[in-house]
Structures are given as structure tokens and as C-alpha cells.
Image (cartoon, rainbow, N blue to C red; front, side):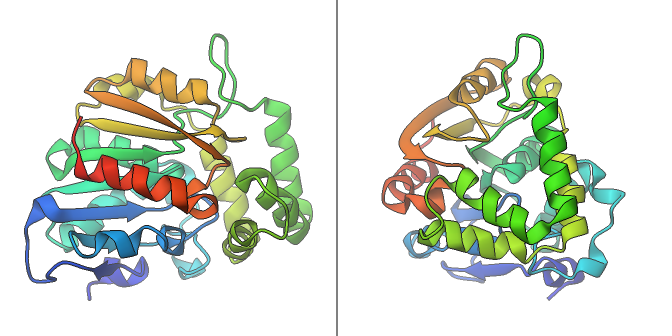
Length: 274
């Protein structure tokens, strides 16, 4: 196993591990506060048909916090370099990329410079900008973000307990909320703050027109972090072919909270092109 693979806990499951049939590779990339376990309901449905690559973003509780470079990850470009390094180390020539939240935008950026590596991008709960702007509704005001960063700084455990049910959508007793709380709390608080600042303050709207790889945008009807209008905005601005599917689900992690609805939708978009 290479250095990059080890640092990111890369796992390859399903298919024939020696078979480099690149059309059959699905890469799953998780978002903020989770790790590769967020895909646990999807993976069993893919392994008969596809070779599946999973990895953890640097900063996830499952990675070595000593490897987290605050400067490198002060923009999404650090995560883009990681993704490209993983694909290079595994000698992947093309894959179906499934990215959730933060990683959806990482895939979008990577596809601009390396379109040949991605046959399509499946973007779950994706946003090019979380902050409201003139003529743009991202879902958050600047005051919301100040409050969010203050909460992380002052009492991380209490903040996790409040943030998890809001983001997942559901009460504290639900399995999905407990699971998200666990992976969120596994992050080192200073890394969580740094990462939250990177994510909630980025603005990727200008680059959407440069994307040529087909994009499948998948979204919950009700998501505290990403309003449905954001999915529609992305579809209008993307440079290549795109499709939007809004699911009758609630929350920002529907693959965890509503797998019975989300898994068939994801499988449909993985198997069929626009």
C-alpha cells in the first residue's frame, strides 16, 4: 500500500481487484464530519457489479491528525490534490465519482483540470457556496457562520450534540443522528473549526461553467445546509450536461438517514448516463 493510500485509509472492495476495467470503478468520497463509513448502506449494492474505492478525507477522525496541514486545507485545492494523488497511486484511468457535500465540490474542481479521469460526477447534497449573496440564496447568513464557529471553539462536544440533529434532520435518538454525532465528535476540535471555516466560506460559483463532465445532482427536498434552489442554480451554471433529482428526503446526509430512498436513486444514476 502506498503512502497516500495509507494516510487516507483507502479501501478497494468488490469486482476483481486485479481487473482494471475502468468503466466499472466507482469512487465514493465523503463530506464534513463523516468518514467513509457514511457509505455503508450503498457499498453492498455495488460490489457485485463494480470495483469500489473508498477513502477518508484528511481531517476525518479516522485519519492521523498530525497529517492535517492547516495551510494546505485552507482551500478545497488541498483536497483536490489528495483525490488526484489517490487516483494516480491506484492507476485509475477513469471512474464514476460519487461525492457528498464538501467532496462533491472537490470532484467538480478536479474534473476541470482532469476531465478524462471522471466519466461522470454524482453530486449528493452539493453547494458551490453556503453563504447568501446578492441574487443568490445559499442558506446561511454571515451571522449564522459566526455563531457556528463560536460554537465549535467554545464547547465542541455540546456543539456536536446540537449540530448533528439539525443537519441530519431527526431527533437525537435516531441511528443516523447518533452515527453522525460519533464521526463528528471523532474529529479534533481545532481541525473541525479550520475545516468548517474552509467549507462555509468558499465560493465556487465562478468555476461551474468550466465543468464539462456530466453531472448528476441529487438533493433532499429539505436540507438545512443546501436549499433546493442551490441544486437548480448549479444545473443552470454547469458547463456540461447535467440532471437534477430532488428526493422526498430530509437532511444533509440522506444516504445515512433515508437509505431505502437514496440507495435506489444513487444506483440508478451510477448505472445510467444522462
